[in-house]
Length: 423
Image (cartoon, rainbow, N blue to C red; front, side):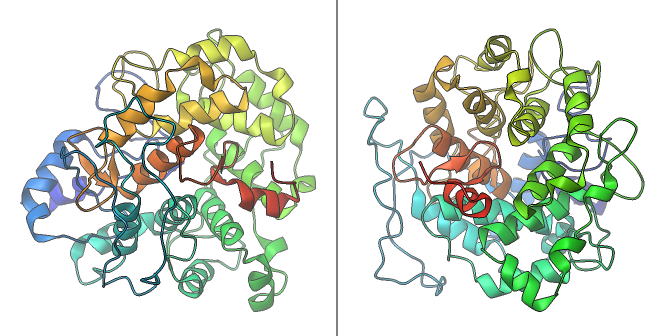
């Protein structure tokens, strides 16, 4: 296999990636900025060459998703010493609340814990280093589902904290890995990781004043309220949402022009009720999440045409239960988050068939090695594992902790950080 082909295999983009050249499977239509999805044919090529010889891969490397019916497991691997052997890792994933689903369609909770724990164990392999640009996002994608599965300590806290702080630059931004340039997206992931680990005090102890030096507010454009991703100036509603997400967690929203940013979000609204990357851009489920999430953080959901947006989002469901990002596109597990979180923010989740969506997600599990893929038959990866489990949490799947639809973080974490009272 040529190196050029291998480089295509690992060209997966992180959540809110800053490249403007990644396109969807179709050769037509707008850029698919929000979806770090390896094309299916490349995934299968990758599986053909690597899967049989690599049972454990790096944080962002996918693995073939089996079509064998899923069976829940409660056993721990001997290679995962971080987990006490006597503990029941996940309480009652089972079928409770989904009795109409086949018995075999259960959440493979322990397998997913094992899968995520295994991702950082093969540092002697080329693929680990070819996916270095995904490291910070990969940690966020792995840590959040572990928390939702009731295993917040399944990854070593001190090692995670050391890694995050090693990516902090003197200018206040975080890179994807040590030595990588700082960017808004990795800075947001770093803040989310620190919040989940309850590590803001650790940050202050190790680097006094660092919390207030994290550079986000300075990236706002004063003329239109948008935010740039980095010093090169690319703007996008992804960055605007990311800025609001991180700044609100840090308690620094007073540093930005909120009203100017809200005006920009309003300008991105379309006749169909959805939102695009900018004024006049096609509606996309991912961009809907960023815009509605921004409005939710600013307490301005009154500006949303709820029924029109709810109708457009509910039309994203296909006959097999899965959701797509825009009309005439394939279903994908990650839209279980982008679509359903937006519906949750406007209280319209009941407008879709939740049981069929849960069944679709469960069919995308690998019951042998763990992990979730974009759709059944494709390779699993930590990105889709994260959003698959997050989607099930939004659907109130038994045994999962509640996720905050605005922040894509565990609800009790955002309650703690933002000082809210748990429901």
